[in-house]
Image 1 (cartoon, rainbow, N blue to C red):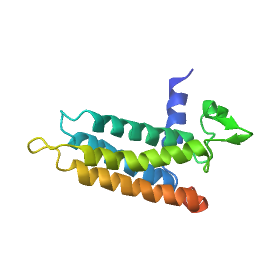
Image 2 (image 1 turned 60 degrees about the vertical axis):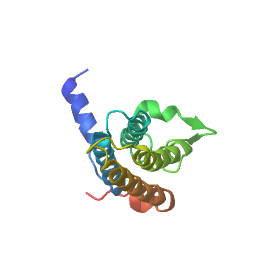
Image 3 (image 1 turned 180 degrees about the horizontal axis):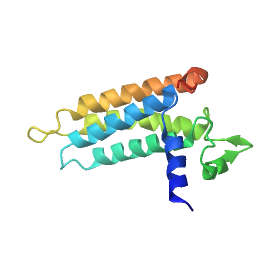
Length: 148
């Protein structure tokens, strides 16, 4: 396998070309900042942020139709792809991207100076993801439309 071709394919898949991609990248960056703001002795909040970040990356790789990566086409029940724009697994990923950063920010205990920004960053990530959930479910043609 040619490494240059693989790199080009990866850049093509991960390039933001719709409003949904921009919102997911915003959530991913806010999750990374939230993770940096969580103090060391908190056990559960980093894992919640890791799961939200994994859902962001999986949503980016999933593509607009849910069929960008070949192994993701196997999630079908009754002929319906569960990772389509309005599929069940996609909806669950969006809900996790919305709720887990908020929960992680609220669960963070402050230790000294570090930890004060975890709550506002987690809440802002959850709010952006919540707007994405509502837009992706009720206005999929507007959210998944190409903007570039």
